[in-house]
Image (spheres, rainbow, N blue to C red):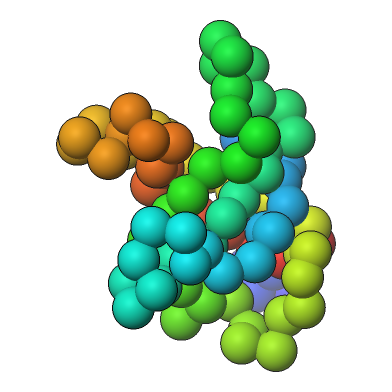
Length: 95
C-alpha cells in the first residue's frame, strides 16, 4: 500500500511580485507585461520590470485581472534590452 504513495513536490519561487498589466510603452504590437518585484534586492531597482512574455507564454489564464499577485523565478535580460529594465521570467504562478 505504501508503494503507491507519492510525495507532492512543492515549487519554491525566488520572488513575489505583482503583474501590473500589459506593457504598451515600448511597442504596442510586441505585447509583454509589466512586473513589479516585491523582494527585489537589486541596487536601485526600477518601479517595475518589463518582460516580452504574454499570458500564454507565462502559462497563466487569460482571464487574470490586474493587478495580480504572483510568485516567480526570473533573471535580468543580458541582451541590450536588460539596461531598460527587461527581465526573463522562467517560472510563474498566480497566487
